[in-house]
Image (cartoon, each protein chain N blue to C red):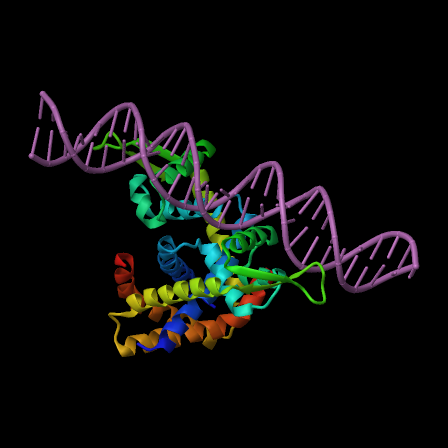
Length: 149
Length: 149
DNA sequence: TCATTTAGTTGACTTTGTCAACTAAATATC
DNA sequence: GATATTTAGTTGACAAAGTCAACTAAATGA
């Protein structure tokens, strides 16, 4: 590994941080904040699940998560039932209303990516997605070292 | 552009958000917060410059930036002189102390990337950096559409 | 049985970021 | 050359995002 490699990775990190920053701004024209959006997304994909099961995928503090879920319950996006086997936990699910909101957010997220890709050729998009897959594959392992560091 | 392309891009965005999130945690063992680190970095690279010139690269509100610079002045990391041609502005520079802090932060950022790459083969690193370059190249243009959207 | 752990909630707090009002200097307009 | 507008930077007030520890109640382990 050369200094040049390190520099390139760092350069990309700065670049992609700003891409993600731009993309995240679209939460401004949604009724959700970014962390709420993350919870909505993970809840949709993990349901039915407990709050604890959402901690890892959202990388959130359980207190913070608890408050967001509380707000979602109040707004009627989330339903919860007592857990069958564990009296401390709840089974969380999105309500019909919550699913509708998820769909809206999901669609508008995809639309934004469409806008981003709209002027790219088929080949460019191919280069983009395969590069993304390769990075994911290579870093997938490297990330483990990272969390330990 | 297919739905699969959109999905892949979104998948990568989620993945890389968490990579960046992990990397950003290393600010916890530095005397700087993440936004302070960004200012330190951009100041190092743009100096001598005015505060206004740091707004764009840091993506920061000028008020917020002003407070961070104020703290840097107080800690002696930054020096400022009245601007020659513009009495409203200042010429900002890192002090020797500020440069030292930049070097430390810069070194530890590189070290972290080294840890991340340490178990990758030469080939894997090559795949990684070329993929990163390709993404940067392709999205470089796409980003323009994005900021308008 | 009693100690420890775990799920979730809450209060208090810090950090990060936004917004608008403001001062003073620069630039544009008439 | 006076006056209106814009721009650089500061500040106060606030909102959003995140952390930390204490707490309740249920579950698990010794």
